[in-house]
Amino acid sequence: MKNKIALITGATSGIGKSTALFLAKENYDLIITGRREQYLEEIQKEIKDQYDVNVKTLCFDIRSESETIEAYESLPDEWKSIYLLINNAGLAAGLEPIQDGDVNDWERMIDTNIKGLLYITRTVTPRMIKNRSGHIVNIGSIAGKQVYPNGGVYCATKHAVDALTEAMRLDLVKYGIKVSQVCPGAVKTEFSKVRFYGDEEKADRVYDGFVPLSAEDIASVITYIVTLPDHICINDMVVMPKAQASAYVTYRD
Image (tube, rainbow, N blue to C red; front, side):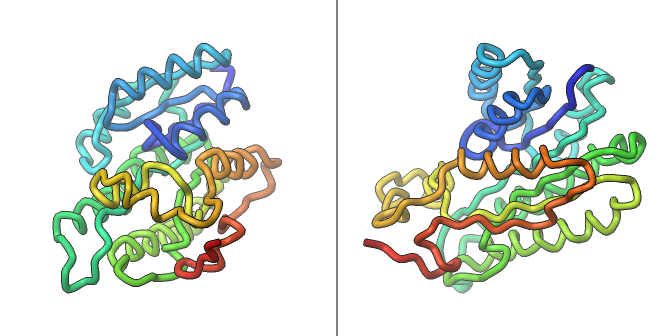
């Protein structure tokens, strides 16, 4: 194939979708993944209508190791040599203190944010190692740097992503594979809507009184990182709205 191949998890909306569009503009062929097949097909069409790149869709649940492996193995051989892996799939569920937390929410976050990231990385990296080339970008969070009240388990999952990013870099550097992390602060996407179980009014209040980041903001940062010269690796980048000083301090008008 003439172009480098990028696989993006959680590409049906938000940062994942925006990143797919940004990378298509940079002439990456794309594998976009997620659980909502109709959305994947719509994004595939949108990209193909705008850019002269190839796009494949994989609809599976990244929380399942077997589904993840089966999806990858379903690709034609020439599509398995993925150069760029964007580990974007992730979520927050609930906002309660530990003593009141919903165990189902905890398992959903752990299975997606940690185990899902590991499943797809374990599946894709052997071919990267064989090719002695590749770049992994993990989407972390300011919650992986600082813990905030009532977000303990979500913050723990993103602290795990922070640690795994460093571990991956240590394990893969000898094979010429770069590993980066992008840690956003408040980004207005489906994130808060998912956290509050679809309550749009409650989700919108999260962003009252300041200008949050957009999915396109983070996609532009990811694109910057992956289009630098080969000898440069951005190990870690924290990206915040101007009004947000930390995970738990935001100035609101």
